[in-house]
Image 1 (tube, rainbow, N blue to C red):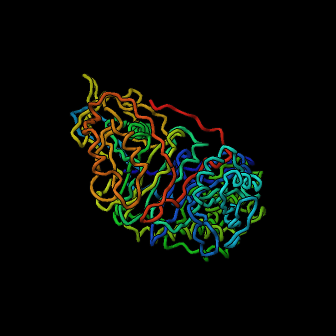
Image 2 (image 1 turned 135 degrees about the vertical axis):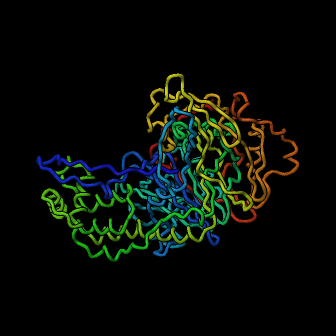
Image 3 (image 1 turned 60 degrees about the horizontal axis):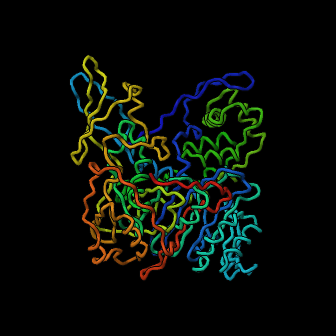
Length: 610
């Protein structure tokens, strides 16, 4: 089940001029309250007709002019309809994906006399041309701009020459990136570099999409190690004909008894991270895998029509029309509105929610003296409705409408999750599909029975029965007794909770290898390092583990509920570590999030797995 955000009432007091405004129900674009985990990197791969389109969300904190981002690609990206090498997209893509695919943990409560457990309920969710120019050993294949970005497409054999060119052209890169850039350059990779335009700021950052003629995605993660946090969450979605699998990484399933169900998975990230560590440090968890027909996600709305907006010159009417069209509420939408409908300094103490929602309601026909002042101030500051309509078409309508068509045509949507620290970013994950694997649901349930002490009708313990028959009795925090919020919090990838549930056992439930056909292959935890090293040789279209190799592995004796604590194996490093070419199509190609290319270096902190 998914807990939807609830809109609250808008404050009724204007902080400027001492005047009052009517109490408005918060139903505008600045009521957006869906929490976003900024620490997680998100990427969507769409595979169709021998091409993969990559959508990647870019997060950045720091000096606007120091932002840069570099993406290694095995070949030049395909041109867009307007001749660009990449397109800008909508953060609503990831908002929708999170909304419909995030894991949830829900307890089915049984009555136990007058002993009361929590009674909480939640709603259901369902310019450069080909040829290029030579410049100091670097071939510049293209230089252009799109959305808020200037970009360059480069190729060269020397990591030093490439990094020097990037720095000379303000795509700021630390010298520490040279060896890793060199490792990709030696394979004749091309490099896509982004920076913000002079008139843009970090608030203008939007997702980007790149299309490459490939059959299988690869995520070149090694550069990210230069500027990452410990246990960086990575969420990857795959639209393909079948369920997606990690090709050269292990696969884990969680021991759900290690999850804190009484906080709806408040320790979820920690449990996943520890399970991945027990699986060699190179492993993914499948959080959801379903046929797209079974999980319809409305990326676009048939009511959207940019022509109904482009001729509007009144900001109030523009906002009201946007809202009537049911355009999505998101951080990106808020930034666009603030860019074109400016809030003058005299109203700086007024919240964005009050200022813009008041303007929107004025456009809907409501009349109020204070709201009229907001509208007049916005008009005086200048409003270009045609430019805002053009940006909405570029950043919202087109990418969401295109993805909506692709989603309906695709067979499966898979969501995978892992956490990686710098010392684990030694090989680039590659992915394939397996048509024989079953669906994986994102909604987790267990049965719960409250237990009360004598003379009390409030539960001090809860007996939880899991689907595998395991029974666990856990104490109820006294601060959480009779407190509904304690028992139903949405899963957070950046939760502060770091402990597993006492008595639940080890975080790692099952360790597996997923091949491109057939059922999962069970692996004992003691063989995690050995199997991880063998998977370094994985090639698309071929069995990753031979029968001879499987015969050398120990019998699976791992039982998460009874295994004593183990020291996780050290993540093995690959002899190559990069995306490689297989006989059935290139695994290289799809680059993902390269935060190591950001100027915010110095964030690397080594950690030892407990």
